[in-house]
Amino acid sequence: MAERDWIRQYFAPLATRPGASGLTDDTALMSASSAPVVITTDAMVEGVHFLASDPIAGIARKLVRVNVSDILSSGAEPFEALLTLGWPPDRPESELAAFAAALGAELEAWGAGLIGGDTVSSPAGLFLSLTLTGRCLADHPVRRSGAKAGDDIWVTSEIGAARRGFLARAAGLESPWIDALHAPALPPMAVARLVADCASAAMDISDGLLGDIQSLAEASGCGAQVDLGSVPFAGGAAGQAESLDLATWGDDYQLLLTAPPESRERILRYAAGQDIRISRIGRIRSEPGLAVSDKDGRVNLPETVAFEHGRIGMSVTRP
Image 1: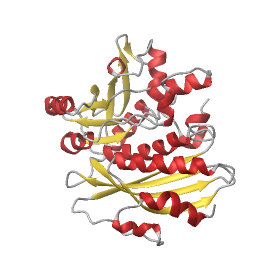
Image 2: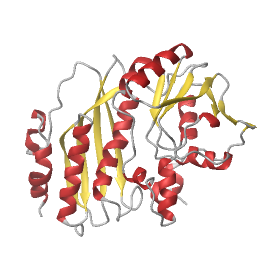
Image 3: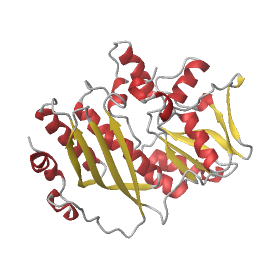
């Protein structure tokens, strides 16, 4: 099937916003917005971020969600998307159809619309990139650089589901955690309002909870103190070693945020009303560096507390 046929049959039906012009042009007109607009982009590559055998619908959902988590952490709601798709000639057309259907459904679920992009043939394997815009719910986006000494550190939902899924798949076991590798669970859209109204700083958790806390604190010119025992781990954690493993793996795509202590009641009340699971796990401090403790006292951290992209590859290839 020629590229123009891919677009006409599978992607043009998703591009219903006026500015998309039915994907018949080389440019798209972004919709006007009275609110500030943020933009993010993430790429995924076969053999690096996913396996060739992974369900194609799950790959589409993950592509959307890893971008949505960035938008939500800015205190914004997803808006419009551009897709770049490199499709291998040996993948059947039925998979292209399934990919497009899952992509459209996932964008629609988050209130976003496809307005353009590019499609090419990719003999080296499947690769994808999504660029997503978001409309801020306040008069500015929330950045990771706004935390202040004394702020509480909060995290949504659970940490470590993707790590458990990776271990199960590597062992050849059936496990519900494997779904977290294909389509990570995100907090509900309402979390964007929580971030916009209450957070001094925020980011999504992609490279490991502890590493991302360290990144947020450093961007804010501060340090952080984390109570490992307060972290909500997927399936629980049997001891310090397992806790550290789950807290440094990544691929969680939950939200990390900070807020002053006087916002605690407001955060908990709003979260309860919107079915957002959120936990307070530490505080920002003026002293630089990351300090972690548990019920037994200070925790000695490994040399690396986050996944380092340039050093060892990505999720599906991690040792």
